Image 1 (cartoon, helix red, strand yellow):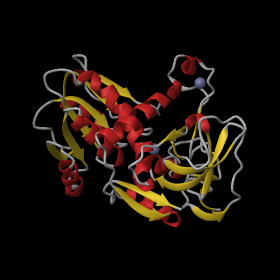
Image 2 (image 1 turned 180 degrees about the vertical axis):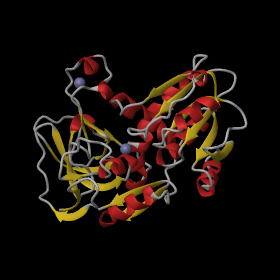
Image 3 (image 1 turned 45 degrees about the vertical axis):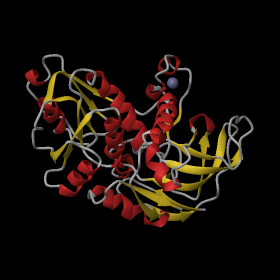
Length: 332
Ligand SMILES: [Zn+2]
Ligand SMILES: [Zn+2]
């Protein structure tokens, strides 16, 4: 099969021929129909996440067709269309797994990071972390639901702790793949969305308004009204004090990314008055089931840019330069 492989951090992916993998007892073999390109892939390529398997097939927003089942697999059949997310394995025995915080597992393995992912013609995945996908989404349109959608949804759930009062103003910093999905869920729940983009990125601001944002501007601007909650998707530490400054007393600021540049020192009084600053890590299977059931009822529409598998390096470059409106999806 064809695969785009990372051999070492800092190098472009290389197109290689690999053997089609064989599923282990708990795994299913999938023909990859589409695989989304996520900012985390860039962090891995750039060496900002320090523990990848190498060589590595990237890709953790996999839409695939079941081709074969391991001996222990139940609940799936050959021919099913399934999705594979970032969290690809947990030990099931550590304290966090026992307490149903499997997203915080002590011995996790992640798809497209420690497990070969979907930048390939075929892949294998632990059946416990495969999900049936809602019909009505094409393969490419379903792909961004699996990371941008799931992590975005978990981030929104954390932000909702401060979205129960008389105003429901949600700031979103960084308006890419995750934001474009979260904004639609937030609108459907009756929240007002304030979108913050790179200063001067009028295309992203226009996109945010199209998706129902009541205000869109640069991340160096203050919103016209104070926020009840904010989610930061851009991996930029200076946005943390910016979001705290824009938030009301008791407001919540959620860092939704896996990597962020250093957060500068800031005065205590922007955190004072019970503002909450927190991160969101990974996803649970419950998040996945909930969100994949919710998305088609809104319905969440995903904006995708289809590219060939062999164009993976170009897709990553376009993501890096902020040239994508929506999410890049590779089609093998
Ligand atoms: Zn665990
Ligand atoms: Zn991701």
